[in-house]
Image (cartoon, rainbow, N blue to C red; front, side, top):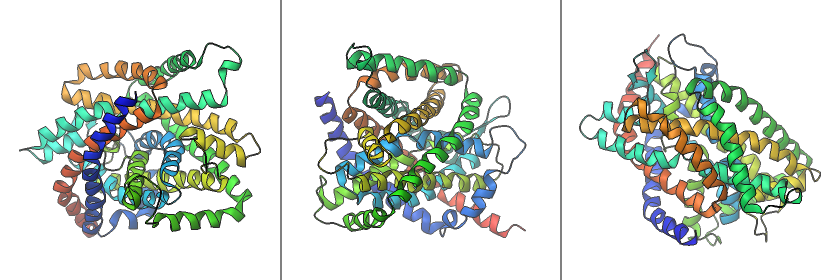
Length: 445
């Protein structure tokens, strides 16, 4: 495992600067090109979210719920803990900046997923990066789409979620105190349990996935938000010093994180990309199935995603970890660090309550990621073979439950970088088409 982890890190090192340049540089370009349209029209995005359109496909609310089910999850609860453990409080600032840029990227990618898409035999829409690549870039879009889809088969495996879900149960419940069979066998049993729970929904297809997630997501976000706000209010005297340390450490040139100041920025970008998946190309696969007729409207709704999952949920998690002091002089990392922080600040039972929320967060993420893989395999082969990915996906849950967190993070970071590169190239090439739609919409009566 250690050798495999080292290999992954060496591969990531050669790709992460390309990813950084494309996401931050490309995102800023799109921000300037659109004159901040997505960020300046968030109020309209909220109105559009609940507006129904009678057509084939899923609603905007169902599309955003499915996307949030995959992004508002363990990446926000344990991913931000990993970032603070590795880079200190200042990493949050770079996660926020990446989230703002990410909202613009998701606006463009989801608008393109509606603007350039195909239709299935029954008239249902079929959109996503692989489709706007092949339709919008006839000459060389197909190789990009194949590259993206192959990377997607690995990037959307449930490695991180299954790993951190298992670690949470092992840390809080400590099942060996009831039946002593050893950690390894308990992890396998938990992996099998997660397979049975998620398989019941996943094998039901897209409609079942979005029906379940549209009910789970609003509840789980409100519960986590309520608990987090209570902790912050109960420790209000520590909040301002925590925020002060976040901003002062963000520009600390002598930061202890590996790679110094630029290493800190890179760490923030990587964890923010993992948290909200901006630029990766996952979200357009759901938004491309929306019944929306106006691409810009779908893009505006999609832009809400990074602001909700990174700016809101990650911030609550990060500030709680900082004011708890659990990250100082501790070997705790990932979900274990977050559990310790909540336990310290919520009457000694915070880890138990967080366990319940983590289970809902994690399982909802397991439900939605499988659809991305099915769609990638559908594109690479044809629809009759796509469903096979579900069984590979479910089987990988057991492996992920027993793998080390370093290996899991390495697999995801590498795959996301390989997905991001072709997707951002296509977005920048096709961005003028979205700009034209914005101009047309502004001129409309």
